[in-house]
Image (tube, rainbow, N blue to C red; front, top):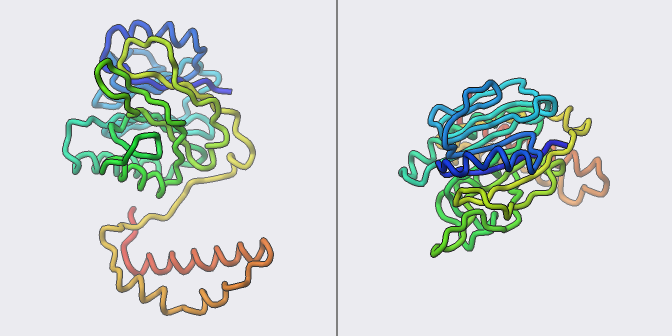
Length: 278
């Protein structure tokens, strides 16, 4: 079992000073942080070049680092069969810049093998993680999550509490579909952190054989260049596929055949209607 602490230090020196105590108290093996007060000059500390997302490995036996990388506003490490990602996207930038960074994150994770755990402060709102409504940023995040097979782990508890202001939930945890069942005990800490943000603790169980055998290699197309007419022509050119699948799902094998035939047709239509991304 790997114990994970997710937190936004909000550039607070007090939060930075208290972090060591919280790590000891929670017996954290891995820290997924953002808006850190300062970067640490140790080999087990990783941060993106903007200084807003960081990962600290506290237990190298449980979390050996096999690979790592970064982009604008995020950093990731791969440990055995799991990739851990820390993300921070500032609210003080136009939506177009936000979308560019989000696309960079999606491109980074789309070919990652095994499971994925993401600790993020997207500064966005979505009903999926307990907000009363979704804003444009939140909608784009959930669209990306749907494409990449990511599941929100939040239970609705707020993570940002400041006197005189409404409580919100900018801090969100995600896990890939194949990893969600292995991430347990997600909760918001009630302890004083020195930051305006409440920290999150969660645990990752040991991977099973099915996860180790699973890869996340997915085909991608440039949807912005979609030719809807060509897509529709391919789909309608093979009506027999839809006809053959109707009423033919009496067994598990029948269902599998229906899915395989349908996905093959969709892939063929995508290839005809838009170029693939490299």
